[in-house]
Image (cartoon, rainbow, N blue to C red):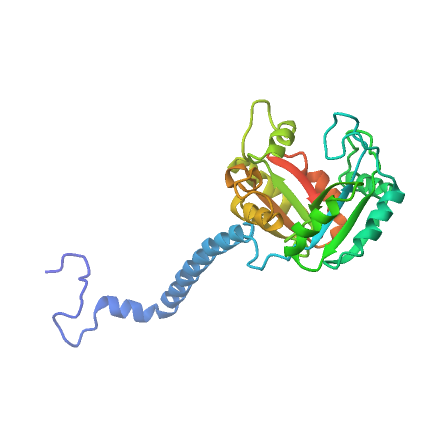
Length: 308
């Protein structure tokens, strides 16, 4: 006797009778196939959406420093006596300020040193103009009067000759000190540097003005992300790198090999992180610097140049 409900058959009973479910699927083959296709498409789109979101977020993460050899360090700068009075600092106590004429004479004597490939005298006025241009680039005014002083810039034939050449030049009575003028690893790779607050001496001086009262120490994760977001908001930002403390310390050791190995300059715990940014238009630097220099967590912003 029938129960009033159609029996769902899976092939048992009459061998000539087609199972009900199979017959239903055959009758609705088109819609079923369409539903299957739609389900598959939805699964693919869902996976693509998740993957796309992941790739989108990953694309805005900063890159690590490029795997490249550090540039040979052959530049140096000679600082002439700047007029320290009796009991003053420096190595020119009681010596009057060197004149441009004396600076030119120092440069001429240096040209006779065979280990030097190039020697250029820089007048006090030229140094003053360069200093003012640096501040103008940042949209700032110097904190005090810019005093002109002459220098001599030179290029070594070999980096390893620095110590011997420096000793010879420092023996000249007009000379205060001789320092390396590092060739920046980032020159040609980035146009803009955003140094983040660290535990270095400069950060302790520069960072409090951009942070709420009482906030100290190295940049926080939230500050770092906010700075990165602001960098990517710049229409000219093409590529962003993040140099960690270890890479910074390695660069310092490469730039200043004569300094004591355990010096503060080389200590990772007294170092800092820096974003390096490649701009589509380097002329956009002033506007970019203005947008970034006052953000919490930023120590300083500067243009990447060969000798900086």
